[in-house]
Length: 449
Image 1: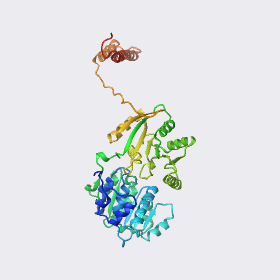
Image 2: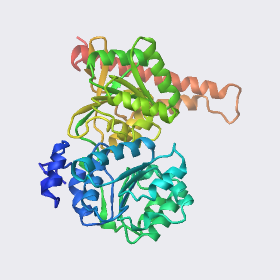
Image 3: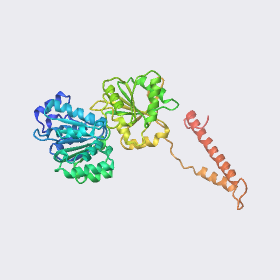
Image 4: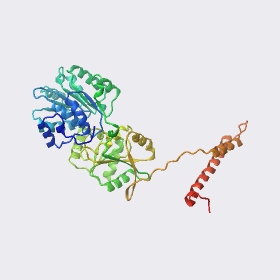
């Protein structure tokens, strides 16, 4: 899987389809598309685990549309975990249909409408169906006979978020009624229930994962911003003033914190967007529309916006803290640097987060440490590392101090006296070490002159 030029004309696609993709602005395949599309065009089932912003939606839409039959009914079903993701996929699918497949009928089922209306619409047999798992379960229960049996391709998008146990059961039961459908699974991770179910349908050699070098989006610059002794709002405003972002997305790990942060910014007269899981469907839908129309430069969000939503033109991402589930950091950072663009992910950190930062570093993130000052953002000086040096003389003197109070008879205040004696010895050696450092700085390691 390389990042060399790979035009869509390289695939076994009809020339008219390639031309239609070009009119939509799609000319070169992304790495995930390079590995997924050929296999999917052959009708093979597969699992693809790639970073967010890698172009996975078109990795399943392009081959699935290429395999549609104008004479058949419902052939493609795409299940996504949230209404917003369903709507996003529906819009991408509609654009492809309008450009290259005008005969294709696409239907979206997300709830919010009468179930009877959805059941009636399904009986008209659309060719492509985009829906949430909750609506799928409701439809399965409401219809004695569904048109799902003849589906060619079933897509599970963001599958690790779909994993309500009952939904896994529903999908497994539905797959058993189908005539050997193609199953395309896109997931950030694979839980045991999902993987156990998928093993019956997908060969192990059809699990595509990025190599170590492509786990993380290399077009994102990751910066650790030391904000010690600064209020988060003040530090953020200083950062914004320095960066002058085109569009910045700000994350916090709880709804309460992001709401409070949003309120603090608006209190300072800023116009700031807000997205979080406690918002109603209509409220979130309206906010997403306003974001898409470019109304906001700054957008505050809980981690609901980190997964799957294709928020447009995010130039910078700020994490006010690190998420409890560190996998979400990859999703946060992946909101920028999408589709070959570059971006920057800023993490406000303190010493308390060092363990989490070490874990992310082990997973392949390369952080640059920065300090935020009135003059702007500066690269931090390398942190000092202290080597442990064995000090036999210190051990000897501590042992002597303890023995001085040793007695077969336990006397009052014995432990306190021993502790004070040991501390005096340690302080003595600490002063010697400090004196040695001072002498080295003053005289270059030579004796006092």
